[in-house]
Image (cartoon, rainbow, N blue to C red; front, top):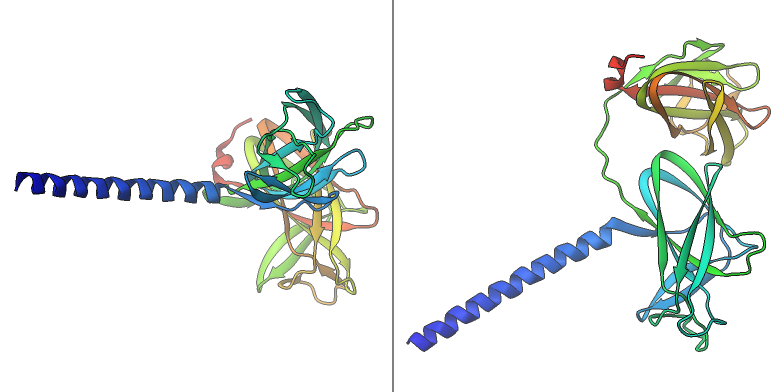
Length: 313
């Protein structure tokens, strides 16, 4: 009886351990699966399949003629995963390579070192060699941001790039609308029958916004264009802080299905609201806005966290 009881207890304990390990593995796999997802660049060179640990993965060829460009919306993290082509390298060779990054017009670079990988290959090229995977992360702030990856003008190396985007969990921020201190034209619009006040920039119209940081300002931008235009349009908004260039935002607009001018008879149409954010440093600052594309007007509306209302210069 004692021996039977022992085996029963041992079997029960073994089953509990197996169940616990299965739960932990399921949680781990689900977290790993949901933390990053593959994304396709907007502009890229040749699309290739690389076999890594027996699984085919999509990469994009990055060389002197083929930069990689993407517009990505934050807040998130963009992981840039790279593998250097090393077909002409000897075993155990260590090779450095450099990737340049143009981020909202600001240039930086990342240098990585690699050796020939034993787990990565071209599926149909037996004699090819690829470097070990090397990566770098780009922390993306709120709003839309343009990223361009390229290599040096005289660099003959070929790098294969895979982009992964991390999903960010952001708590909702209570925001209030703020009015510019100066503006030439206020434009009321209706969105789903509710009226909002926007302010025009472009052409002869201008505005300036005075804020006390630190704060993250949410900006809604709507492009005004000819009523016959049914396609998407790209436009650029230049933001200056205290008279100096702060940032330039590249936005894409499409005709809105819900926003119209409150005043009747306006022979233009409104785009959907494109969003970008301005990070205001500590202290009082003045912001001005310029449409980089000649002959275009935009409507802007501003929101700041309610907590920033208590900021002092």
